[in-house]
Length: 316
Ligand SMILES: C[S@@+](CC[C@H](N)C(=O)[O-])C[C@H]1O[C@@H](n2cnc3c(N)ncnc32)[C@H](O)[C@@H]1O
Image 1 (cartoon, rainbow, N blue to C red):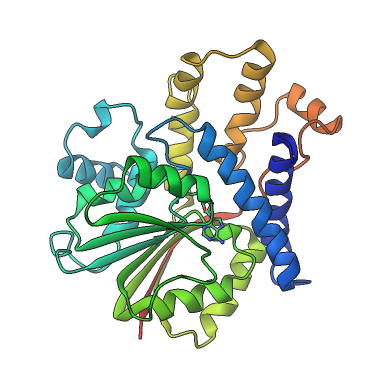
Image 2 (image 1 turned 180 degrees about the vertical axis):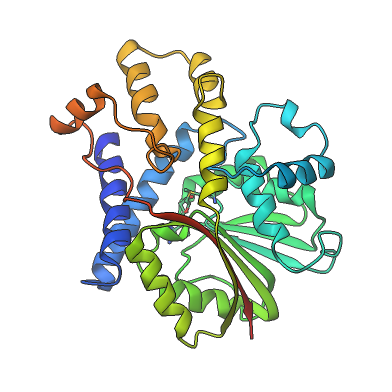
């Protein structure tokens, strides 16, 4: 499969998962969706620059202040900090003190290139941190460049976690679950690998359909007690706006790259969608509309995201 087909596969799969919910599912179909997703993230892992995270980010002045106090000056080095801020926020909302992780083990499901977990390994000193991702290339890269004592990465599927029962005190999940065809299987796996009294901190984008499905699952007995849910759309939009501003990191990164005119145009016009542009109110340019009409770009990249949420559960 070529690059364009891979990306088409990703967008089609993500839309299908988030708009159709659990309807018309089946293992064979789920397998195909996952293949599309893995292939596309493999490709992105090969193309991404070092230090890159793959989420839309989060910004709140107070959270940013606390994060910068914990890791002074990190913003001076090649990041706008918004994606790291989302990680910091997700970990901080777990009701364990950040200075009390010495005996705790943390799993991140859907860790991408591993940079977010690597960042958290500097925020708190945990006994062990493991990142898991479906993309073999992302995991290979994370292990080659980031793993060390107490921080490692494994390839695997969120719906079938390769861990023993009760291995972890905390499970994190950042902007990844909208890719999982079977959300119920994933939540059951989270409950299985958590220790009793352990916490699940979950951050993701939701269509109205997917959120309704999540609410249904919260009513089921999956071994998790749902203790907190908050709509963090405003904080996510604040980060996307700063990132996409003319002097923001999105345009700065493009300035430094060598590419042809057409490629640059595509990156400038199409790229914002991948970093949350339409959720934050940016519209397609006329040329993007035309490319979509001609079938050169998928008609809908991201599903119509209605909210971005943070949810916490405790293992019974
Ligand atoms: C938008 S990226 C977010 C990555 C990372 N959490 C971050 O914020 O940088 C979504 C990630 O979820 C991973 N993913 C998708 N489906 C998965 C599955 N079934 N099991 C594990 N990881 C999956 C993708 O490979 C990708 O790395």
